[in-house]
Length: 299
Image (cartoon, rainbow, N blue to C red; front, side):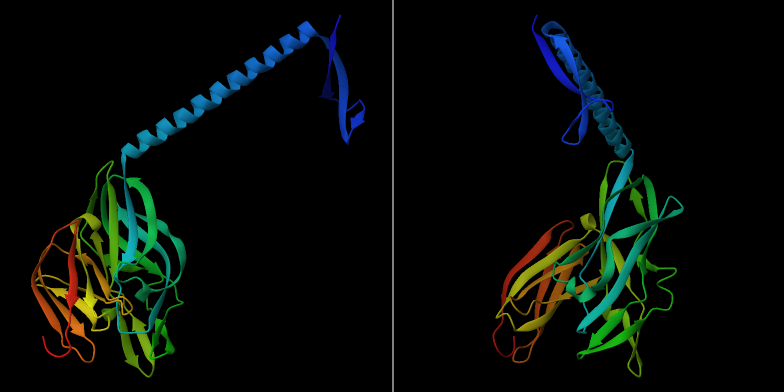
């Protein structure tokens, strides 16, 4: 009768390359039964694992349909400084009467002036929360803050921001199950940094929050690229603006409420300010002004 020999781990038998095995001998029939048994065990384990994964995904999907999600980013910061460096730690949201802490994606020190002209900083990725209402949002800062003016770095003092946080100016936001909400924070550096004399500066952040679906954008390109440095959209109810990219002439005002605006371009030396009237901005859309051409002298 033919036999098949198998090696099995056994602490009492001989060693092969440092591992201990024992020899067991089966007939071909016994060996075949043994293989079939192993195949059945493998199939059972595979089915159990598959069902477990499916149940887990089904539970996750079901639980998320009962919740809402939101994300937060900073954009459209602008100010007349070389840099405004702020240490961002976390967000705190009041959801259904309860304060909940949300660490930002990457806590650290950021130059807010980098987040203009369409550049944004993701503070919080898609996060599932209980449906209901977000009544308030706060931005929590650290103490490592500074401002650079005319090439000199100064400390930015923050009286209470690192403890109680800075309230984001926004309307209470309903959170409907199954819907996703994208919040854009407008950190207005121009009114947030205050010189107090003797080379000292105070940071009193003015931060506004907008739903991406409720605001529009204004974009365009000036020609030549160095003819203007700032663009501002204004009407009776709202003002928004941004610095123009001095390398390629492009601009993007990232948070503008729907309405009709007069858009002013503030010119560099050799050119005059230029106004475009009656520009209509629609929620959820970008109004592209195309190429705005300047000629030296008056417009």
